[in-house]
Length: 76
Image (cartoon, rainbow, N blue to C red):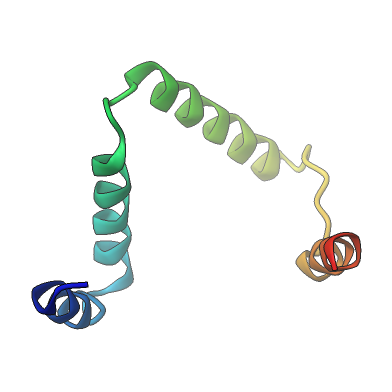
């Protein structure tokens, strides 16, 4: 990585989390060949649906530790 990029990384790491998240999203999208508006809209709708399920108490969740333990057991 270039010196300029390394310096940018150091400075950007000092930003508040919301600003870093926005920059991360921008950079990820900049890697894509084209902006797929339909796919983005579909994901937004899916995330909204899932958030509604969680808020209403309709979603069944599992503690993260159980999920991680299961994945470690499966893939280790």
